[in-house]
Image 1 (cartoon, rainbow, N blue to C red):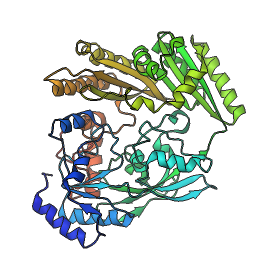
Image 2 (cartoon, helix red, strand yellow):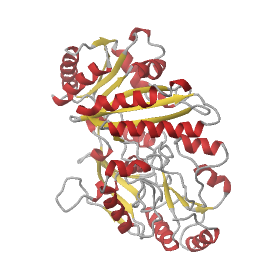
Image 3 (cartoon, rainbow, N blue to C red):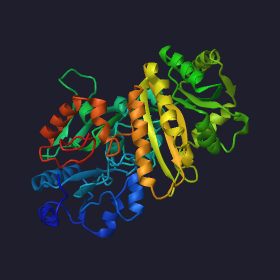
Length: 484
């Protein structure tokens, strides 16, 4: 799909104005300029230079699900690209309108539709802010146990569209485990309600297809998610290990033996020193080395028992228990990691590798980034700050955030080369890119490597649902002409 023309936008605007209330669409420059970058470093850097990676020609802020469906139908008739926008917190460029067109800001769809305290589910519109959603539930003694780092910016629909994960995933699962049902506006203007439960044998599960599709197949307009009561007890532990290897093996054993702490966050030495310690206000008592944070929650007798049992396993692997108040401080300040002064900003260069692998290949994937990124780019002052934070019975994932001072005139080329070198090394080591941050434009060139011939199957589905190719083009390498 080529860039959209002014005449095509004129025709689209003329058609939409007869179908939508005043104020839903705008072409005002000051409004369009707000949608030129999400949280992808390269998009931010290009916008700062005055040459954004993409800029919309038209903005729509629908207030009803029916308006979303109408906008998609008319955009499809005019073959104008549509890019769904939630909170703009994605780190992969998935919301950047690289081919222009219409940005569909869903944040006016921000209401809780129904709270079912028999089934412990909530139906909520897709544009509701994650932190607002949580506050409303907390007021009723309830919680949505997702808690992603992006909660203060992201929307509930964005959680689902990018197949996200939260800090409590080791106990409650990722967003796909918490999603019960959804409503989706399709490119042809149909507003489709999917089956009301996720466990069924009524044919293929369409929810699984939409989750993680990043707006390339349709637009999520409302979601039904699983909730729980606020846990009556939340217990903490702060654990030190002599090495990353010892920590990974200890937590692997705990997981395969059936323990499910709400949080396991294992920082390597660089991550402990440059990510964890500053937020814990120095925390001299941690010493130097590898430190992990754990939380246990639920009914207090069960949380007590799980904490004692898990710590017994960890101690057999050389774990040393530190002051649990360190972990409690981490919990209370867990969003500080993503605010100034702890989160990087221009002119620094940064990015986060999000790697998942089975235990058999987990350490090889970890070492792959040490050898391909941490060591060769240390000459530019790069730090690779790593922690393991989402654990499964079969494997785990780790974040490896690189932070680097501006290296000078070749900054964009160096940034891209870091990603190429790191991704190639991880894939060769048996890791997968990635666990939950999504693909967007940043990782799209690696979709063929990761999926093989299955990418052609995904593209066939995309073409069947979106034959005009209007839905978030250029993302996930879902369009047949995209490079892979």
